[in-house]
Length: 333
Length: 184
Image (cartoon, rainbow over all chains, first blue to last red; front, side):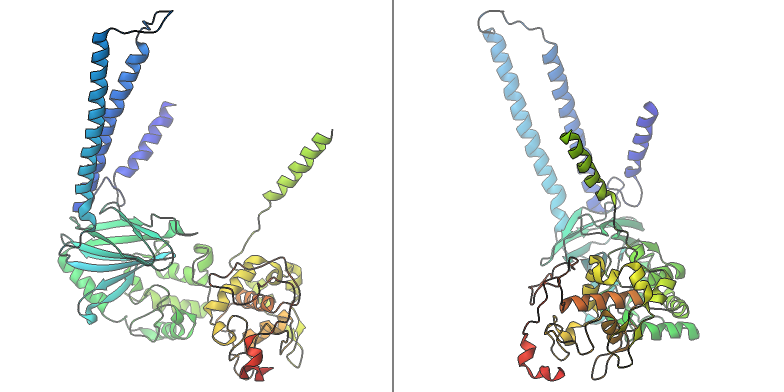
């Protein structure tokens, strides 16, 4: 029994750290929320213990009721009890009011749009994330998917939208949770404080593959971020060698091009994720598989078995075509 | 006694729920290849379906999941562009009770795979064999001659024609009055 309890506690402790934990935070807003969580837990624990102790004391108290006739306590003890009840009521109101105020101050900055260094639009699809880096200059705007790079120490402003059903953006290590609702724009602000990779997950049930709808937030140093941004602005890598060239031609002429965009090719679909720099991301299919040529080929060969119900149909490819296409896609750094 | 018999029967009925439809997202390559083996008539109208279709129990005509996949492909591969929601625009209607190449699924399969003269493109290079059959099975239900128990899911948008699994009907569609009827 004790061993079971211990292993359960060990399991629960996994949530206290790691790349996806609301208690192991690396952004201003996330830390504020973590403090809020601990404050609530602490206050509520004190209240719970107090109430339980008082209840136990009351249960243990000897019944001094006479057997016949109504119970008439002494006037002094009646007054004392009335005072205690009044104090408890005032304390309850006070605790609730102060927790409300504290919670208001901790969360009101989550959605403020005050001078953000970076303005992004995140749009949820079944079951992946489209990320648009907005800029006043149209030639500086670019689109990527499932992976957000941000510079450390700068304020990041997210505009959250949804294309089909309600999703929810939640990267617990950085900031709070915010829904993506079709037809409206929600906002979320965060200021990452430490370079690293943080995992997020759709937090609103959005269909069959809700569990396979994750995203990564990569916090880079300013120089690394600028380098990455320039890379994303550039068109896709030109195919090297005949195999990759065949792959590009297949991508443009098969059904791929009707849904996917690759900058620098004729493929310009906007229904599926932008694949211009597919191989620069850590995962494909919203966190389903690590990015490498083998997993890309596996995905192309049978997307429905890997992620049943997703919107990518299987495309007719023979072995040579599959090889060429995966070689081309795996080279899109 | 009757109570015991009743509970036995009830239990047996409950047990039928233990059977779950197994779904394969990708056919075994040999089965897919055998489903490709249709034998059309020389005039391109009708023909013999592949033997494996009967062995599998005509999954593309009687299984709701396959019909539904066909319905999705109908939108994704822009069949609507020419055939609209079955009523036909620049392409022929599926609803007026007349199939130019006959109502058999084999004909529809060949039409989609190889294309037909005067406008119907070939999709054989873009769709896998099971997708071709799913689409053919679905298109057949649009202009069904008989009612069916299997049906694809309903439209998200407003229904512009009778449901796919309705009782048979050759109904008049707008395209019967339009110049597009030259295709008939």
